[in-house]
Image (cartoon, rainbow, N blue to C red; front, top):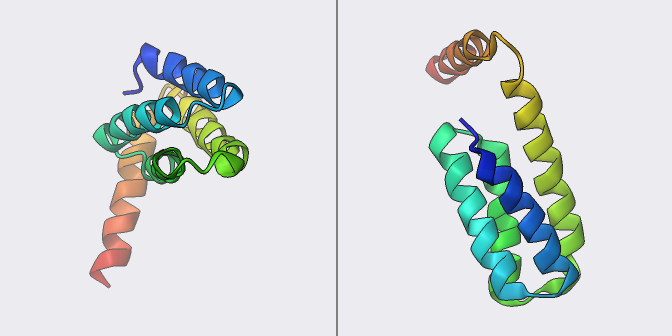
Length: 103
């Protein structure tokens, strides 16, 4: 599940972007990507990866738009996990994915 410090990581990324700290953007986007991978949050993982690569390349012009997607995906994930039956919902979606892949 998303850890409490993941919310802090998102805030830290925002501060790093505000200060044009490409290396910190890279570092904290990488951290968030790892958390997303651990729970199978693929859309958040992809968004964090893109931001991480922008940080690695020093592409500060892309930070805002990429971070908007990270925030969007993070909020979607937090909202999903706030449902009392999120585990059941995740299993249903996983089963649907397996059915599509086996066709």
